[in-house]
Length: 504
Image (cartoon, rainbow, N blue to C red; front, side, top):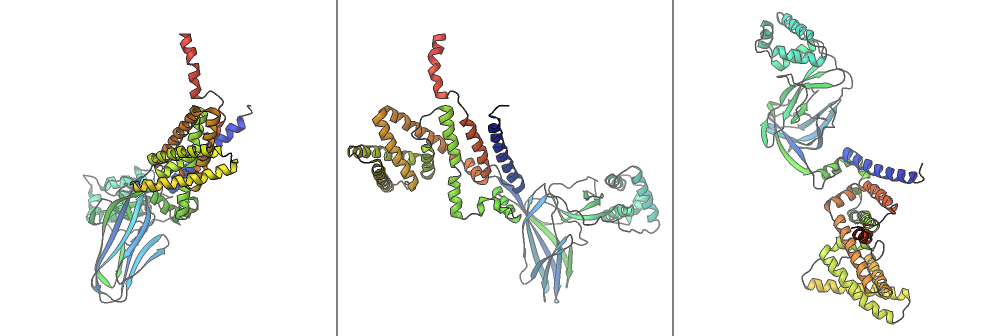
């Protein structure tokens, strides 16, 4: 086994860990990989109307709880003069409005904000439900018994039995037994009663078809059958199993939708509106709701968030510098000085930053040539350069502002020190290697800085580095992998061009 195997194994672990953690954050918390991704959100409003009789009023409305295919974001009630509370009863949630005295027409509102989420699982009963006892009078008992027997002969499970029973009841040419039962019963209630009569636990549920900007909509009945593990939803008209993606199950296990005490002529209707919100905002709300906010940098103060937004871009700049120097072979003044220049460009934007950098370095080289004639010690010379660089930067900012350039040089003290060292290095390089080498390394530094700036300033890079900081493990693995490269740099391949000409 190669001695480098542990090294490559560690790099593979870093890359796999970074991608796995980012995928976990994306799947579990819904943090989007794309910048500016939008997600549809449904705002559903229930309106309760009734006529109060001048007595104390208590209104109870069933509220959806973990409806299949949807995740609840927010909910609120608008009920002037009424007290409102949400009551949890076993697997049933109800909103209750109360008032000491009311008379005349009354209107109450309840709104809920939902987002489609296929990971939401339906409610599982605490105890397996049993089929309700159903009693028929003759001749309906005989008709029901014969229909159940015919459906049972063509089925083997609760689901298939339900479909066969619906086919018999929806037949275009019903027999006498079917016609008798349909004539004396509501269709959905009839299907539910016959399923319970056959020993299959069944219930009716109310669903709301979601359509943008619709008002005064009513709930539609759906059929639910318990198969021993969970409630399965069927369309009672067609027998189709499953819930359409545009249907919100408002009521599932509750015995009633609306109860009004102290009022008459009660009714409930629904309005809905489709909106779009940033997916990142939804993920932040979801992480806070689940108590996973500790995994996010958004829990930090705003000032520290801004600092980390800039700090987390540095690994990308380091990756670009490592690639340009190790693989391409671009010569720069200093190892990672281009990264710091790129950070300054991010703060000032590219063109003003380039102009300011070239102006500061050019003026600094002129002043450095004067300082060299004084034969000062290195510490004094660098200290003097830092002060001169600050003066130059301040002067350029004032002149730029007077000329109408409001960007300015928003560079902190740390790049000032780096600029001073850059001027010192270039000055020494000028004395030792000549102006040509200064131009080569200076141009190389600016070129690499511009490349790093383009990567670091990309909206996708800003988004991923801050929202998926674990991806820096991947960046670390790539940098370590490039550090093991000992082959030719791309810029060195031009040395072999004469061999190609000679071979011809």
